[in-house]
Structures are given as C-alpha cells and as structure tokens.
Amino acid sequence: MYCKYITMWLLWDDECVEVATDHSEIAAPLMALAGENVPLAKENDPYVRAFMHIGDEYERLGASRDWRIRFAANMSEWAKCAVEEEMVRRAGRDGSPRRDFSDAVKLRAVTVGIRPNSLPLERAVGIEVPQEIHTDPDYKALVDQAARVCCIVNDLVGVPKDIRNNQIESNLILFHRMCSGGSLHDSYAALLEIHDKAVKTYDELAAKVLAKTPCAFRERMAAFFDHLRYMDSGFGFWHRDCIRYQSLVATEENRAFRIQIAERRSESVNASPARHH
Image (cartoon, rainbow, N blue to C red; front, side, top):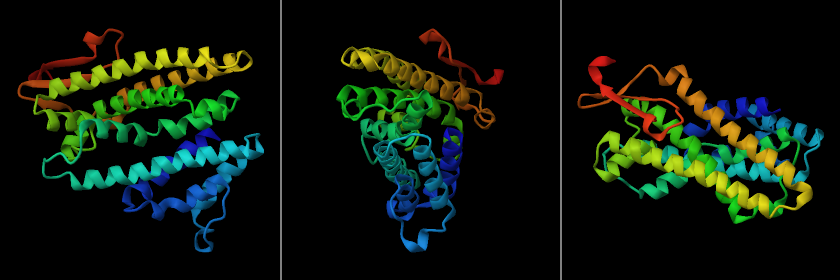
C-alpha cells in the first residue's frame, strides 16, 4: 500500500498538481482519499478512483477512520502548498525576492512531502500515533525537522538543474544566494548548517516526546521515530545517487561543486577547480 500511495502521488503531482493554478482543481482525489463523496462529474476520474482505493484499502487493513481523515488532511496541506510553490516558481524570473528566506524554508518543508509521508509510515510500523501526540507542539516540530533535512538535501543536489531551468526562488540554496548577495559556496554552507542543526534537533525532540509518552506506548513510538529517521536518511542517499541529478555540475568562478554524504561536517561540501571535472 505504501508503494501504491507513493507511486500514485508522484504521478498525480507530475500530471496534475504542477500545472494547477488553484487547489480546487486538485481537491477531488483528496476528498476520495478521506472517504468523502466527490462531485458526480469527478467520480470516474482515474486519480479519484486511485486515491479512493488507497483510502479504502488502508481502512480494510485496519486503519481507523480518524487516521484516514488525518492522512487526507496532510495530503491536502501538501497540495495547497505545492500549488503555491509552483506559482512562486513561475513568477520568480526577474531576480527580485518576493518573500523572506525563512518563509521559503517553511514552505519547502511542507512541499517536500515528509508530513503526509509520515502517516502511512505509522501504518507500515504497525501503529497509529495518537491524536494527543499529533497535536503536541514538540511532535509537530520533530516532523518539521525531518522535513527540513529532506528538502535541503533535495535542493542541494538540485542546484545545477534549477540553475539551468531558472528556478531560483524554489531552490533554497539559490534563493539564499539571491537574498544574501553572497557566493554559491556561502549559501551551500549556510543550508548545510540548517540541515545539521535539524538532525540534532530531531533527536532532541524525539527524546523529549518519548519522555512524556505513556510507558505502554513508548516502545512503539521509539520504533516509529527510528523508522522516520531511517526513511529520511534513505531519501538523502537516493537524492545523492539519483542519475537525473548527476548529469550537471554547479560552477562558480573556477570552482565546481559536488555533494557527498559524510560523517564529518567539513566533508559535506567539496569544492574543487572546475578544470578537474
């Protein structure tokens, strides 16, 4: 079910969300995911049928109706922000920032998709995180830190592609350079600093949430936090190794940049003379 969900989500994003100009254009599949009635004209839409199947199957396999509604709500939040980000991407062509960098980070942390992704991960681990934990500010902050880790790695490897496509405002590294007026290397370093802080904060928040989780549920929550961390790490390695991110190299003056995942902070950005690439 997780594989079906991810596959359908990515296809729907490519075909529908990226060309939408308003959330209402893509709302019907999410209504179906929640188990709600959809407009009659949309009942046979293939994405409506697909998301209805995903929601129905999760319920059939044991998910509660509350979990299904929460899952669809997270997907709806993502869709609204994804449409907003597409509008920013289309508008950002003249080199003038239209928002603060902190706002860009907040939006990107939603559009990377970790928040809705974490819901079926609960089911994959065999639990449903209780509502009182979902609404806990520390838990919300924990999921936000996981999202920051993922979106920053995605944007790090996407710099060359986004430079070529002039998608500056939707890439955090390039937007940071636009806002700061500094070098590309400085912006790489600044985002890596945010990334490393997010990793540290994630672990601190996990310990904090576990400390106030009822003993009978603590072991399950610990397993979920480990799996969420593992999933985030997996996305990081996927981004680093994905072929589509390796065909271009970002350069600045006489330097070319290559991203690698290493244990030590000093090895995270490798800048070398461009003639060596």
